[in-house]
Amino acid sequence: MTPASAPVLKAVREGLSPYATATLPTVRGTFDILVFRDPVGPVEHVAMVLGAVRGRDGVPVRVHSECLTGEVLGSLRCDCRFQLDWALDRIAEAGSGVLVYLRQEGRGIGLGNKIRAYALQARGLDTFEANRRLGFPEDQREYGFAARILEALGVGTIDLLTNNPHKIEELTAAGVRIRARIPVPSPVTPHNRSYLTAKRRRGGHLLDL
View 1 (cartoon, rainbow, N blue to C red):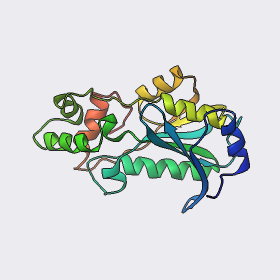
View 2 (cartoon, helix red, strand yellow):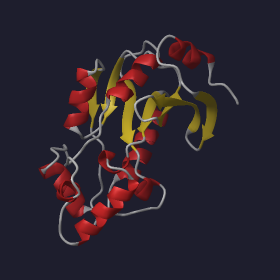
View 3 (cartoon, rainbow, N blue to C red):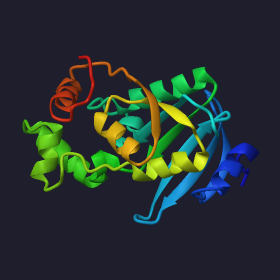
View 4 (cartoon, one colour):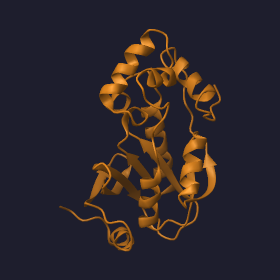
């Protein structure tokens, strides 16, 4: 295993310890990748770190929840892949930053239930109504572990790339100091318009459609 860079490892030794670390060359540059095991799950979450972030203020940060259908399989139902790519581009342009990738598919209900929700959406329910019909909260994601990762990395204040006010509230409550919110664009298509509309109307997302 190739270890992550020394400054990153020094930071995490003083807090939450990663299960695995390495450097990861990407099309946007070479990141440090750190895998953290959530003892509650156990689920493995990921931090992608570019440049020096320890003790820095205004670190660009994206806290992003997994979306296999959009990010890997190319689904047009959501804006997840675009948001992930856009956030990584912004971090690369800044020369430093953090992507925290949380393994909480389908707003926390898991892949299988997400596909069941898709089937309900095909019958006319929106994405939040479908989760409710399956017996789940509209959004059961939580961001406390992301806050622990950011604390372990030693960031000062962050510029959070998000449209989700619930994410801002949870991270703030967990002790993350958010200096600014950076809006993330969400291109509207015939396939995702109802999804984005529901996110704004039911989820309170700060979207300009």
